Amino acid sequence: MMESHGRKSMNKHDAPAPTSGRQMSLIFEPRRVDGMSKAERTKAVILLAQILMQAAGLVVEELGDDRS
Image (cartoon, rainbow, N blue to C red; front, side):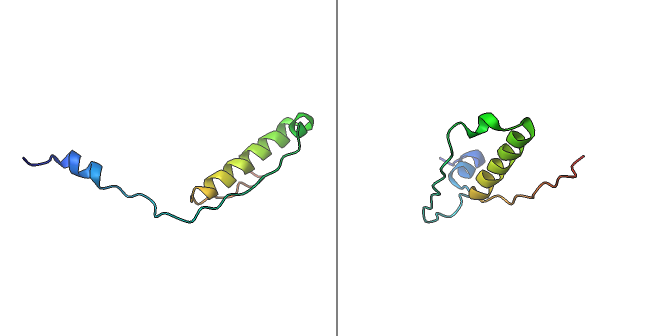
């Protein structure tokens, strides 16, 4: 019995090559975000998102303050 094309493509996938495990230890001060302004929280969320994307191997462009 021949396999369908869809079945073959399921078996072949481009998985990223395994890398050695690296883990960062981040320590946050408790309740620090309570004293942040909305703009500061937004900036912190954007920076954390960029860190996570870089850790996942994505190329991340920095966003300047002159966004429109």
